[in-house]
Length: 542
Image 1 (cartoon, helix red, strand yellow):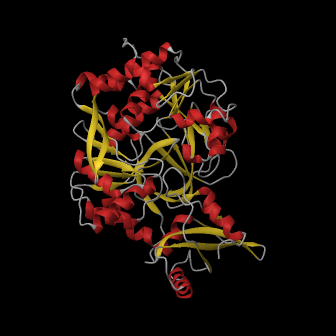
Image 2 (image 1 turned 120 degrees about the vertical axis):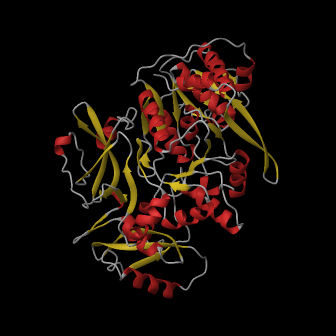
Image 3 (image 1 turned 180 degrees about the horizontal axis):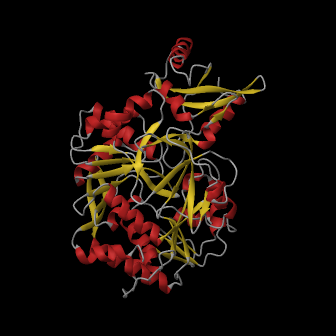
């Protein structure tokens, strides 16, 4: 069971179908596209696998990967899979300290990276200690470095894909560290294969669908399904800075039917399309993940998607997908409730996934016998189990213990989120567990509180925090205004009036303003509430 065998199968079934396209800009957002068919992708990845094998990369070796999206990125990753080696993906935007810590923790056997990373290893030798094989996608800094150019010119040889057991490690994917230190999540070949099957079933995808992934890893699932994946003209590490004109052109050029990525991308695309009276008629599925999506964004995109709708699958690096819901269902059934502070509906559990709501704890839960399961409409901690749920963090036993609950021969993963099931079995998201405020008389949850203030026209987004006042923790709301100029006194008065209409917000009397919220590095949309809270409590935000 090697995930790479799916590409080999597609190469036999549809050898001449395009597997991946990559744009080259000509000017004024016009493009030509280079491409690889499934046959060419399979042959190139086998060629690369053969070369890497000759350099000493074997089954089980960890290959640290820092390669920009390209046709070769796809071929290189599938080459690593074919070897039975383990690609290690770390978000370079997590900051130098976290990045170096993550590399030291995983102790890779090989490095495959852009030239800048090879230059960095000169100054951080300890982090790269133990690496025996170095491959640069650009120039070589010294004699020990192989180059992609040299790999391409090497004599072609046959390569037989290594057979892997279902539980063999397929990849190590690091979390972004948005709510703690970055952790290496261990994926197996069984998990990747199951995720591919569930995603294909969830969206009824076929080889006739065309993918445009705002998050590069997503393309490996769609190519494994036999779909064509068109790499967009954007920096995937900075989704909030994407150029919507370019993405709209990429979608139109390729007749993309399935587009996915951070809500930060699609907020920009929606605004651009509405301002320019444009539609996206080819798109059937617009998938957003990484953070809760506001009702207003679903509404905007319904105006743009004339033949499709939005979808917001719920999950995490450790467990994906867990549930799914369409924007059409939200607008028809749950939007009004969300705007009244009932939380965000995230749909029904995905096929083969079990979800439970338990009494929230900060302590370790060693076994399932220690949990207290809650009934419908009771808010608690979300835990999940299924074949897409990962079992461990790489070489982090303490973090694994905190996040997993053993249940016989299986594990439940603690999502770190709070929510509830309604009477119809739909799951509702109430926020991150660490963002809830445990006050003397009640618990306040971030999503329901913020939803009330977010309905004000001048509010771009808001953040529930706790402030230390008179020796007690009091609830407060911090506002990121949607406009630069506003009358603060009147704005506060309006927000107080708005909050007074609802039981869960009527006691919030402390309101602060912040020009721009800090957000996570991966999706550019998750609000760093703890950082905002610290800034308010030390007097840096008024």
